[in-house]
Structures are given as structure tokens and as C-alpha cells.
Length: 403
Image 1 (cartoon, rainbow, N blue to C red):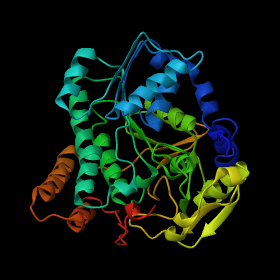
Image 2 (tube, rainbow, N blue to C red):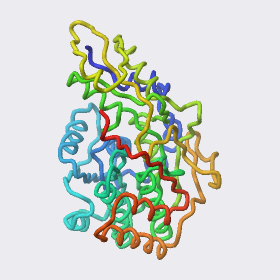
Image 3 (tube, one colour):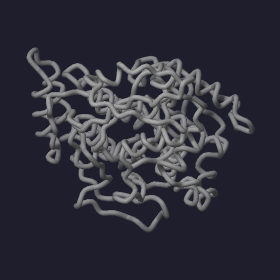
Image 4 (cartoon, one colour):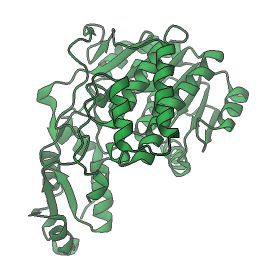
């Protein structure tokens, strides 16, 4: 088995774009981007992940004077530093610091107050997987991180105002059917309610191909460990490359107006099925697949690269909680601006309650978490009360029950 050129495969078989779909918008706005970044101080929270690190690489092209990166993933921060310092002609500011800590910790505020002020603050620290909503504990952790911690950060930023604040969202926030999407919709409402106090923007976008923790990135791990693959046969998603994810966030952060929600101009024809991507990946590697009827059957096959045997793959119909067969970026009542950028649309009138009402919603959820008898059903019921368009899909099955 040969090493895979992931970037080449993404361009040729997933996005079908040799050049980033956002590159023209970046090029056309270079002067404005440089004005907002050159010699400025930047704080990136959750910067060790795929999207955060891609954002950092795009920002560095415009030479900020200071870059501070915070993430709970110490190993990820180490790899980010090695990656940047191993890249030819990569600009790195003299002040480049990484801190393995949680942005909700007391120590984060201590660091912020001493290392700041920051001109640009971008938050990528989020629970982003539907897999992470299996029970009451995982759900509480998700809502605390995506909503409550985001609010605490906003309260701190109001007292220490950056020129730009960006908080990443997800396409799953549009008509959410899973708790992750619902938590991000609540996060969107929360940050929009602060939009008159500080300049805030966000972006909903597609799956990032081969991002950390994704199904496709998991394939690489399975190959190394000589383990079979499993893949939903009926799920389609929009995809962007890691570079594209960084660019859309940079454009949204620096060129958007306060309360803007950005999204990529991708359409139904751009949806890609995981099954098709999986088949194309094996064709790209000149390997054959043997389709299995179950996980048990797939695990019985011996994987031996030296003999070029067919690789066991189990394709299944999606039946886990919170899964949509497709995704969307906006709802029918959203007011869209489609002529400002070539590759990006903007939602201008996304609805949100006053901060007072949102604090009340938060308290309702906190009260559920404090109760001794709370469970997943109670939380979903409360989320439906605070989000009118939340239509949770419950099947009684979690992704953690699958390979």
C-alpha cells in the first residue's frame, strides 16, 4: 500500500477544484485583509484542530505581529508548531506562543489579560461531532462548551474589545435535527445578541475533507492498523478542503459586518456521498473492495497489503440518532446577500432573542443539568422549548455503537 496524497485526492475526487473556491475572494480583498492583519495581535482558541490550524495558516500569510494559540489538545499544539516550523517560506511572528489550556479556565483569563490586548480573536473550540451526544453527560459537556463557555468568553471580550471576533458554527445549525446542531444554533443566537457591543461574525460550512476525527480521516487510521472500514451508503454532505475552511473563516472574521453569518455557495449538485468517496479512494489507490454484509464479517477478513487482497468495507444505511441524509446552510425565511462575494453568501437577518431572554433559556438548561433525575429525553424536550425549529431525530442508536 502506497502513501496517499490526500490533498490531490480531495481536489480531484471530492471538491473537484484544483484551486480553492475562495481564492478569488481572498485575492480581490488582499489590501483589506492586509490592513486588518498586518502587525496585529491574534488569539486563536481551539487552534490545534483542522479548521483552527488552517485559519492560522491563512492569517499568517498577512504577517501579524503576535500569534497566541490555545487548545486543550497538547499533542495537537505540538504538531501545529512542528508543521509551521517545517514549512518552507512559512511566516511565523516573533511572538508565537501556544498554551495547552481550556478557554473556560481561570488561567485563560489570566493569560489573556497579560498577553493581550488582541486585535483579532477567533474561537474554534467546540464539540463538533454528532457522535458526542450519546447520553446526558456527553450532551451536557457539549452544551456547556458550545454555549455557556462561549457566553463567558463574550462577557470577557466585552471588557477587552477586539477589532474582530469570530466564532465558528456549522451547517447543522440550519434546521437542526441533532443536539450538536441545536447547541450551535444556540451559540449563534448568543453571539448575535452581543453584536451591538463588539464586532462578531460566524460561518456555517460543509464537512472539511479528512479533518481531525472525521470518517475519512478515520480511514487513514484503519489503513495503518489493518482494520476494516465501515461507511454509510445513503448519507451525502457538502465538502470543502482544509485550506478552504481556513479561508472562509478568515474572510468571515475580517470582512464581515457584525452579526453576519457566512456560508459557501455550494448547491445540491455539489453534495457528495460517502459511499462514492470511499469507492473513489480505493480506485485512487489501485485497490479493490470486498463489500461485507456486517461489521462481524468485515472484521474476519485478513488484511495483507503484500498480497494485494480486496479490502473489507461494510456499507450500511444510516440509522443513528441525529443524522440528516443531507445538509443545508440556511432556512427559507433567511435574508441572503449573494452579490458581495463570488464564493460566499451572507445571512443578514438570522433571528435571535434579546440577551435577557437568552440568559433565561440558558438558566432553563442549567436547571435541567442540576436536577437529580435529568436524562437525554429531558434535555431534548427543553431544547425544543428554547429552539422552535429543533426537530430531533431519535432512533435509540449512537454512532459509538458502530465501527
